[in-house]
Length: 192
Image 1: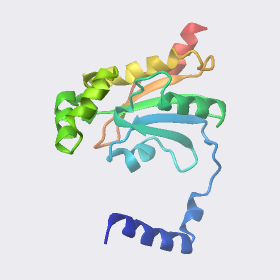
Image 2 (image 1 turned 135 degrees about the vertical axis):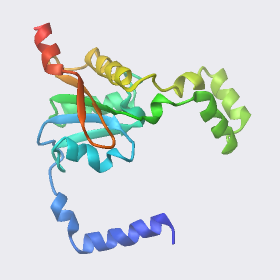
Image 3 (image 1 turned 45 degrees about the vertical axis):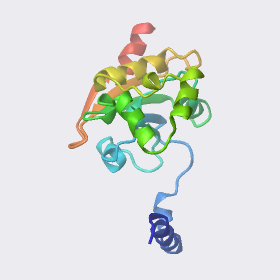
Image 4 (image 1 turned 180 degrees about the horizontal axis):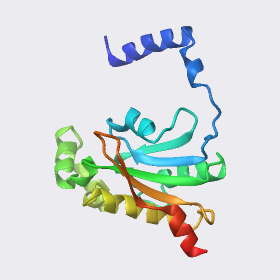
């Protein structure tokens, strides 16, 4: 049996038993918050529990390292959709300790790409087209620096509504303990 077969069999029972009813909510976040966090498997259930969020409370965007690297890329577009179309009025960037993006080695990953069958010709074409894979595949030196850089990118975005608090936190992926590294309320008061 494949993973997909298992998923589909489980899903059929889930729907037939109406287990989805426990998760019914609207598309608007009840707590009017957007969380940007890492896709780390340890955070799937831990982060919402540690932050006291349940289904329907917040919008969550997950990617590698909770990093926004392009101010006009798809992650930032999702931030804007949450703020302008889905009633979010606050943003929290949540990084975590022991993040794989802190130790990401672009050269090692490029070697893995080659080993998994992507040809030198494809890599060369990308490089010659101006895509610098070693820059694109780079992580960050430490998690706090990564969180603060993403918070600052959001705060400086020309389309960010005025006075939207943008916070930065770090979560311990073992215990769920949170550390505030950037308080958007304090920073908003300072600019008034």
